[in-house]
Amino acid sequence: TPADIPDTVNEKGPEKIWINNMELKNGDYLATNDATEVSENYTNGTPYVAVYKNGILYLNNINIENNANGESSGAEDHAIYWKAANNDDLIIELIEGTTNNISDGKWSAINGADGGGFYCPSLTIQGNGTLNVSCADNAIWVWDGTTIQNGATVNITCGGTGISNNDRSGKIV
Image 1 (cartoon, helix red, strand yellow):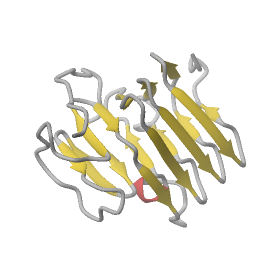
Image 2 (image 1 turned 180 degrees about the horizontal axis):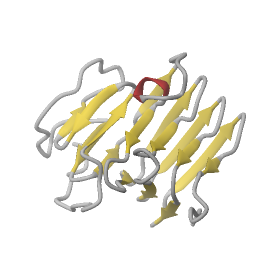
Image 3 (image 1 turned 30 degrees about the horizontal axis):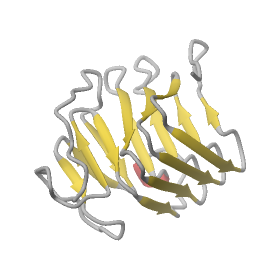
């Protein structure tokens, strides 16, 4: 039985995110690693590898390999992607004891894009799981800061910078 998803709310969470170019809105989930469609209306007890609920992306032994060959400008070019509409801050919660693998063959594996220069997203990775990120470019690229906390283990293999941001006030904690 998969871990239950709590009712925790990230007030600054994005309205939607993309995983391998599949759009997830609140309550949407991926049931398996080979899912080609998003399932809606997640309920506790349902098997999942990823659930997006209340601005938090819960990962449960997900394996994502994105091999898109685009121009690094949109959701199709990153394994996990969100675009800030209002300084949206994504939280990735690693379910306890899980190993989650994210890879991208060309660009950043995890990308939080700006919303026109005025809206700058940040990223928090937390939970007692492991996140392995590999890619050809920057592993994690977020316009503002990136925080890793609460027991999360993040391992990065990449051809560029492991964690980077594009804002003078951005930070890595």
